Image (cartoon, rainbow, N blue to C red; front, side, top):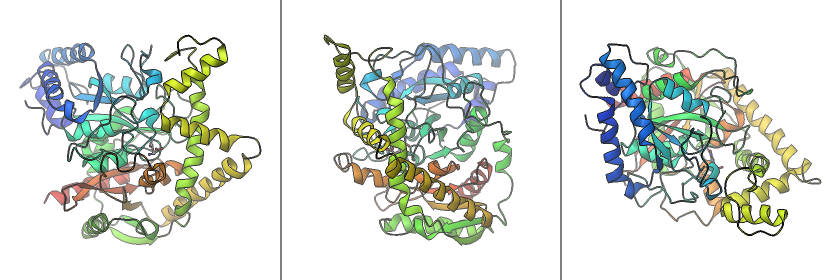
Amino acid sequence: MKPTLLTIDAVRSAVQEQTTTSAALVESFYARIQKEDGQIGAYLTLCKERALEQAERMDRMATEGKLLPPLGGVPLAIKDVMCTRGVRTTAGSKILGNFIPPYDCTAVARVEAAGAVVLGKLNCDEFAMGSSTENSAFHPVRNPRDTSRVPGGSSGGSAAAVAADMAVVTLGSDTGGSIRQPASFCGVVGLMPTYGRVSRYGLIAFASSLDHIGPLAKNVKDAATVLRTIAGRDPMDSTSAEVPVPDYVAELEKPVRGLKIGVAKEYFGEGLDNEVRKAVEDAIQKLAQLDCEVVPVSLPHTEYAIPTYYIVATAEASANLARFDGVRYGYRAKNARTLSEMYRRSRHEGFGAEVKRRIMLGTYALSTGYYDAYYLKAQKVRTLLTQDFEKAFKKVDAIVTPTCPTAAFKLGEKVNDPLAMYLADIYTVTADLAGIPGISIPCGETRDKLPIGLQILGKHFDEATPLRLAYSYEQAAKN
Ligand code: GLN
């Protein structure tokens, strides 16, 4: 079995029926990574021993005639912001360059319990801050569809690994778009669940009220299968919700006829590339042909989403990143003479420029005298943005938008212009701020053959409807 174009079902049934072994498949994935990843840079760490142990466990189950679990034998990889016991976890930062966690992130533990084989850890922007993966302290990731371009970020490694067939599925994290935007740039499926749907235990925190874990996959069904295994209450995360988890895979088959899909003019304004606009409008047409009803909606506070996001996210980041002080774990500056010099130099030498910029912005927004003007104001606008969605969802079942204003940009194009980079998230940050789920699926390409993403947003705890629409669209687009 070749590693290319494999889906979860294809791998699991081949391992179950013993037409291949999971161990052989894992070896062929490592061979492919060896060959291809020098160009792409998706992986930071491989964990072959752990992978082969799990693969052999799955192969034994198959030879004993036992039914494999839902991800049985499936090669999967993890964004390096999720802790893996005994396997280096860096968050893309030098400050955690030698950090070996003593425990597993719940999402990782759950995919492994469901039979997945973890191949390794994937490159990302430092502490998930960025939209291009150029902020990785180690090396950038290149877009497999055009290596002169970025894969998006911050889960650039997670998207590129799927697009380049260096994993069947991956886990990423989304704080302001970091699953959906790279999925869109690399031409894969990326799903951000509702806030609280998936435990954040063991996810290295960026902005705790915005962080989400979710899958990146080659198709909608694989994304649904992974979400089903990682979703649900976890006693280790008090913000994980006690809401029953539907069978997302079974939900895919339900018809979409009669569903109302909202289209908000605020997502089709200035700055939207013409080719992207055309592809997304065609996709909406296609959904209409599937007998969905297209309904105009308004999300009037959208223009405030980027400033709101960058105040809330940086404020929370400045608090979360205070723990990296050179004392408990991670990088410590050498030869400091005093404690405060040790703190200062460890942080100065350990953090990259973007992370420092955000700590400073966030500390400023939270400081006495400015708290009301910035942080409190941002929280109020966040409520207004959430209410925009709540009002719209009284009229519609889902909202369809472009995932990003443009297709993948060139490496180096925006890296020295943080504001231009921040604008790449204009259509994705709103869902994080409101806590609603969203999926990005491929819906065409530009003249230069760069993938374009369609975003489908849903109501709180209703991932099933966006998944179902995405699945129907994907099936229809095949024909
Ligand atoms: N690009 C956004 C940022 O830089 C989002 C990152 C994310 O979702 N982790 O903050």
